[in-house]
Image (cartoon, rainbow, N blue to C red; front, side, top):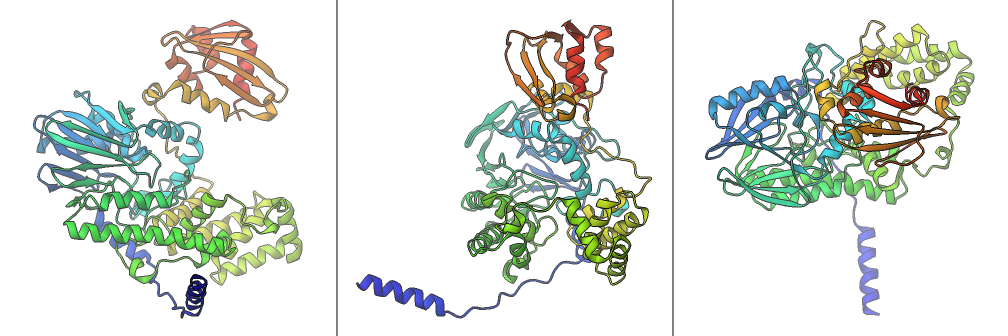
Length: 567
């Protein structure tokens, strides 16, 4: 009975407690983004004895740790050209060979310069066991959409002078000015923790999920130096990235930062933005950073449990002033609003709980209804145009969605939409949203030429696993071209001995890594020749004529398969 009375008193006390209005920070401005550029002054910094950071050369930093007779590289920048520039400076500091390269995670701006650093050294390449899978996923089945959205987010479709900085670095060099990737796959992988020694340097790698599931951090215990990868940088983190990503687990991210905090590092050397030295300062900064992430996670969950949907939560979520005022949580990359939507989706999926969104009207039907409600297409256009003149740019932009659904090639509407996007972009201080708006406006220009951010080279294709490349075929099947087909083929690779059975069955492509009897055609080729055909570097018919691809059986079935995976 006493316990019941105590609990009743406790809940009455809580319910009667006074609510305090949470004070928040002032939003950043485009001028603040300009000032943030100073973070990326181009230089090589010696953070502590024998530990060097190259910042400002690329989106991501590259680090060199000097050993007794060889060196370690942590992250490699994003292209051959930027890696070459950094490597030449590192060699002036210490010309010893490189015996180890460490990838903090799979993102291209950290791994695509590896071939340069590996020249003449044949180093081991360390990474988490899942890194190769995520590299292959991005440059494989998701390459078209990731390339398109990344190009907008980083402003690679804009003139160089229109990109102030990318929040975590000066610019994304991948796909820019003809630069090329130089990817190497990991040779040493681990699951949770790996300890080893290289040229007298003790190294500990910890799996630390955060910005990516394969994220790791590097700990040099003798130097008290910690390399957090992308789990920490001087801006509010990309708890969700608008280019698209698997769910980023905020609770796991907080745990990873706590692992770092309690090692009590004296030097914190991130893969983006500048280093920090001083044990107390690092501990304080990491504490603020993890609290910012946990606040967004916990408050989103609290509002979810109150029955709010993602739109309502995104409208309400913001950091309290003591967190939002931190220079390490300014919104120059991620956003609490985007992050809250990510948390909602990660825990509950796409459905917001509102029955009206469970089976919404088809978009075209909704557009026609809105147009009729406005009094006709011309009337809705006039409303959108008037909204733009009143500087109601977001509303005008949303109205152009309806207008263009029904008249997609209307020139006046496209000009209005372009103007809305331009105006919204110029107001933004967050570079991700700023450049996404401005890039989307640029793409509406009829003279714009497409830039393929992740366009593969023949050299990079040859390194790409054939298994992952065949996965691309599965997600490229066009139902309208294959719904009546039932074909079985066998691919045999003469250089590796691998065999794959392919079944194109009424709009679905099944691929098995072994031979199944009954194929109507057997295809013999080297892996590199088939990769060239799959990626469009070589023509299938010409390859068949030259003999680089040999076909036994029904050539028409082989051609029918390939015609089914072309949009």
